[in-house]
Length: 236
Image 1 (spheres, rainbow, N blue to C red):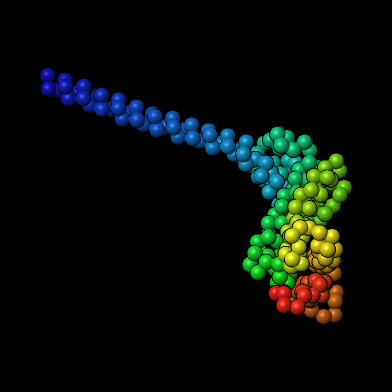
Image 2 (image 1 turned 120 degrees about the horizontal axis):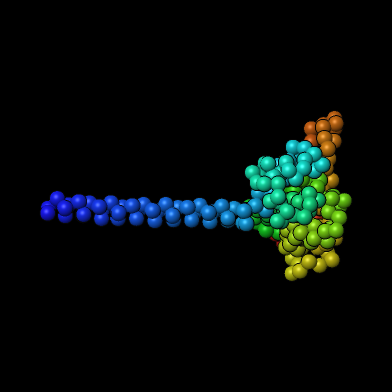
């Protein structure tokens, strides 16, 4: 009798362990499925944009296919069409992503200095040129029009969001409460200077000069010259 009770107890105990093991395995499988689903529905778009950006920097916007982007992102060739209608559509998304990242980088660099000052505005310029040097092909794509045919207004809108970082900083410098005509007139030469310097840098044109070019120093000097002087007693 004692042996029978021992056998029954051990059998029930084993069944209990089996049940717990089964439940744990089922939970792990369910979590795995949920994570996989989250990847495809939540991260796929971002992964493809990043993959395309990497390929653009390696081969230029015309040097890769959608299939190449899929292979780099580790997804099926049908996956991109859940988010992008064509390669051209993907390129436009890469450009807009670049403009957003540029704006965020300029804002971050400006925040290291007192706001609305020559140093904070020069920091925005340095961030702009640094981005161009770091991602030259993406930078060109951001300011191209042909690849974004049909969506150019969207690109312009995102670009204005990035440009707004400079506008707001200049407004603070001028003690303006809004983006006034004075702000626009002051900001445009500042943007033109760093935009031109960016293309001189990525086109290798600075290498042909007979003197060394200090890009950071050039940006600071230009910022000081292009900004109007503060009224007496006002902090620069």
